[in-house]
Amino acid sequence: MRTHNQITKSIAFVAAMLMSASVLATEVSPTLYVEGNFGGSGADTGDILDVTPVNRSGFSDEGFAWNINAIFEFYPNVAIEFGYTDLDNAKQGSTKVELDAWHAMLRGYVPLTEDKKLRLFGKAGAAFVQADGKTSAGALGTFRRDRDETSPQIGVGLMYEMPDRQWGWFNTNRIMLNTQFNYIFTQELDDIYIITGGIGLKLID
Image 1: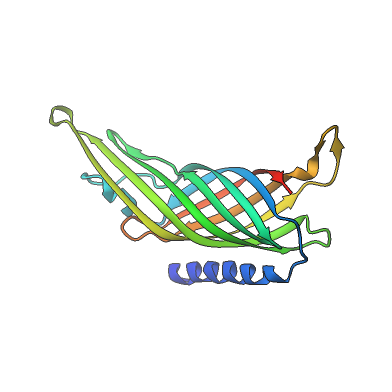
Image 2: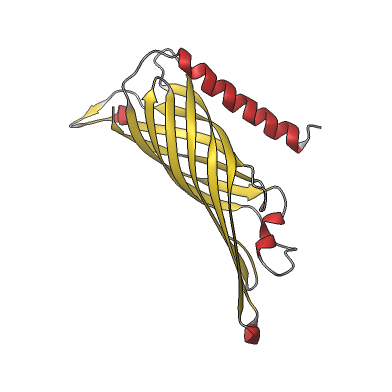
């Protein structure tokens, strides 16, 4: 069976190869678009809940997540991505940990079809992860502990641009569907994975 380190190294290798292959693409105009994604997130162990001063046994580390990204494709199949991700809040009883992350990444695309509407992409960059823990202890008051860190983040995914269909002033080729997997290599907290699908809108092309 493959170990955790082998799996994460394989993901990093795939992301790097996809970004390198993107330089072989045909030239396109700079493009700016935004995307919103929904799905799930989780951590490999319960270590991320060490931000609270209580026993973390019994906590759930998996749940709903959403994010919004702004992507600027400044070179053929190469883009810069900035985004915010709201991760699932882990909680048990009176203890709660709120998690979110801001990221900046470089994306590389590889067209999978002749019309280049379906593209595979890899991305790599950094994420600033925030963990805010709070425990209510009755008459003793509320205990709080925050832990933030900047960590490497990688991802892979698929993006599909809708066919050209004019509806009045709007063309459906401005709409893009995507699904992706992201992984954040945290140190003080715990490694985080995010699996999402969503829709994007091309603003400038």
